[in-house]
Length: 105
Figure 1 (cartoon, rainbow, N blue to C red):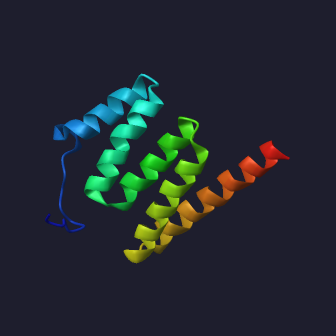
Figure 2 (cartoon, rainbow, N blue to C red):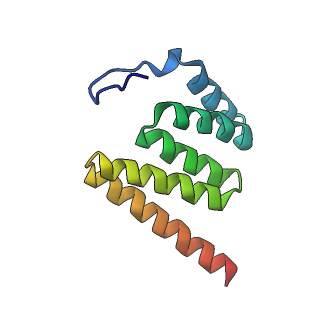
C-alpha cells in the first residue's frame, strides 16, 4: 500500500466509497453511511476520515464507537504533529463527553 503525502490532491468525486458516504448521509441513512465511512477510514488511515466516522457514528446513535473513532483521529492528528486540529478534536471529544454526562445525570 502506498502512502500519500500531505500535498497530494485527491479528487473526492471520483472515489465511489466517498460518493456513497455523502449520498447516504444526505438521505439520513446514518448507520449505512457509518459502515461506508468505517471502510474508508480503515483504507485511508488519515485523521479526517476517522473524525468523519466518529461524527457519523454519533449521528447514528453509537456514541461509544463514535468517541473511539474520534480518539483514533485525535491520535493520528497528534502523530502528524497537527496541533491545531488535534486541539479542536480534543475539545469536541470533551464537549461530547460532558453532553453524555449531563444526559445520564
